[in-house]
Length: 344
Image: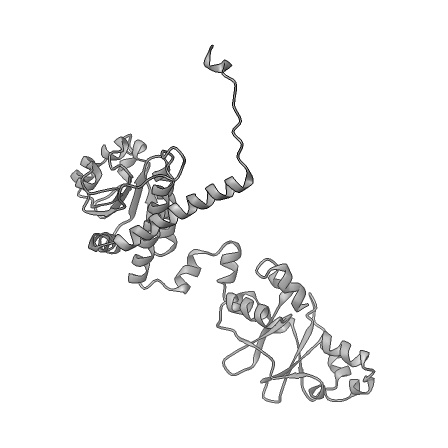
């Protein structure tokens, strides 16, 4: 009978068994990460030193799954203050090695340390005088012997049933790469401001923006004197553009002293306190409202709005004068929908 004619046998695999197997895989990989954490020694510090003192770029290389892990490590290095690029080892020997310079450091990933494409690079790198940091099983391999610093991850058992598919080994490589990148970043004094500069896009980039860049500026929000009546404030403080649900109230020095929101107006009408519409708004405003300084990051404003269940957040300068307002409706995507509904 030909191989194509062999009937396919379906092996029962219940949901319980699927979950049990998945949990065992995760636990095996977690144990491997814990073990490498416990076994780190001064070789790791030597690798950190080479990368930290690198005046060029960190060139990350690896073949197959290790190469894919290398791409993520290079991305983490780049985003945390260390210039990094990926180099495919097979393409390197066909001309791409020209991107490597003597002031670079090569970070090479190979579980066995015997990957042919990586091994072929080693004499070239030696000739160029480029230091090599290796993440590999042990120091006795071809890669380990040629490297200037070796982070040994040990002989690991892969998590798949056959013990073949890169899984445990690549998880450990990724974790070690994160440790390298973040320790180097700490040595460099990399700050949250630096991180913000490298992440202008997406929801993360939005949260890292300055409050001043995201608020509605003072000429687009409603501001009135606390001595004005409620009626005068509501009829005389309209602004072009999208209407905000709050009026910021100031004293004669221009300092923020209160906030009057649509909810405050609704309560007056529901409680039939119409007579107070012609009284000073200071009598019905929320005094000393929660504010945020204009020099803070938008992530701080998001936290305040979420934690305090607020819809509007006045933005003030160091003297307590209003310079803008953040409305929760401007932050759709940065605060989850449940939080928005609770604050509304």
